[in-house]
Image 1 (spheres, helix red, strand yellow):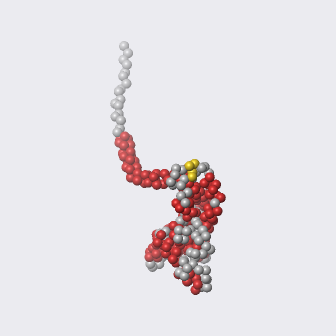
Image 2: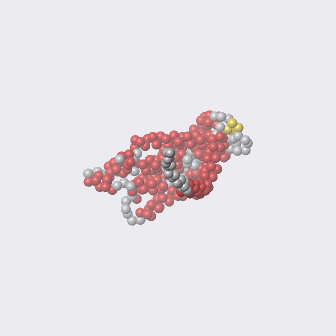
Image 3: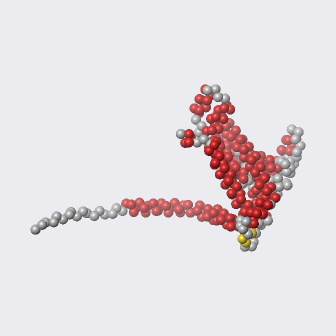
Amino acid sequence: MTLVKEAPVRPVKERSAAPDAGRRGRRRENLAGYLFMSPWIAGFLLLTAGPMIASLYYAFTSYNLFTPPQWVGLDNFTTMFQDPRWQKSVEVTLKYVVVATPLKLLLALGVALLLAQNRRGQALYRAAFYMPSLIGASVSVGFVWRALFSDDAVVDRTQKIFGLDVGGWIGNPDYVLYALVALSIWQFGAPMVIFLAGLKQVPQELYEAAEMDGAGPFRRFWNITLPMISPVLFFNVLLESIHAFQVFGSAYVVSDTRCGPADATLVYTCYLYQKGFKESQMGFASAMAWTLVIAVALVTAVLFWSQKKWVHYEEAAK
């Protein structure tokens, strides 16, 4: 008789409940996170994504806010490109961007270089220079600016002292846009603070070594400061260019809601407002809005492409 040896029976391990408990805990955390984010998600869907999708549809329709929209295809875009006032708004906006953005950044960088040095009352100076950025976009400042550049006002009287008799800038089509440029430059506080943060990150050892080698202030700025703060400079150029394309409040208020005289301050958004809300051509205005979105996206893409040639990152250098 052959004895068959039975294999020992191994005890069955009970399934651990720890992974299930961990998953349930993560679900609760995710649910809590979504609950806290729900106001932002609702606001984004209702106030940003929803209107954007609706405006994209309206861009291909004839819609006057009072009757149902009617599909017209590309007619709004065709009419827009042939509109002389639309062409004028593009010209005025490009001129404003090209003039205001570099001057604003130059002033912001210059003041940041002065404030980066340790001196008494530095915090007070920073606050004073930053304050216009907080109030510059308000309607009240627009009214004050219009009063300053009107006929026989402060600017007019000051320039007469130097022999310049051109009258008030607000009523002069050749000068009124530069009043808006001056208002934009006056609000240099925000990019100045960003430049200050970048200047604080430049190692002082580089300046000391360059000074020992006989490099002067301009050479130290060109060969050390500018390359080291180039990422910050790129950020400011990108941000201020986008803001300049979107200028509206100052042009609308300073020109007394006329965007003039002679359409001299007819920036793109001002004409968009006139077509959409004064003439009730919301389909045309939606086409203008999406054209502006595409234009800003192209400018942004060009800036990101060009940064490879002039922006220096420490990670890339390593």
